[in-house]
Image (cartoon, rainbow, N blue to C red; front, side, top):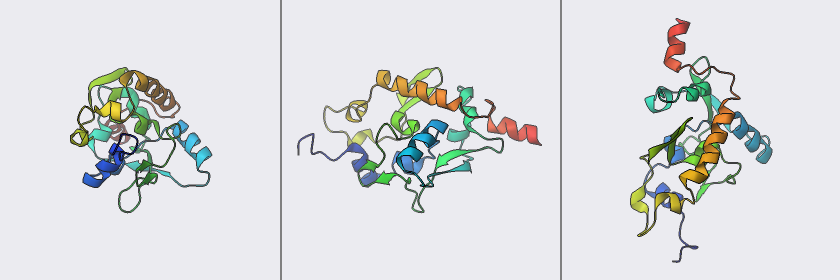
Length: 176
């Protein structure tokens, strides 16, 4: 099998473990909502959901992330099917074109804050499935430099949220 015919890494991942979009809640920005609605009019693809997962709710090093949370601690995320699959997960990965895909998904597995990229990748991505001489970012067609435009776009779109940058736990204390 040559590289063009090789099964995508995301498809191989799905055969061995939960994929990133099955194991995570995917926050969608106001811009993501506009892009997806234009591509898939009438589809009910997001809802507000509260999470108690500290990986979702605790971002002391990135206060701007807290804008993604509503006053009740919920935030807008992609719907999942009853089996946990993302609404847009198909047999070989996301069914949305790259420029329509939620920015969070485009950036995965890079880890970041409003001020830049962290030195490590999100640990869930199955690097053990890479072929000899492949790198994770190269296989996904990504680079930290190229991803920076998406990171900046993400935080610009987060600024469209009406919420102040206050952690959900702090909002809960203020409500009581």
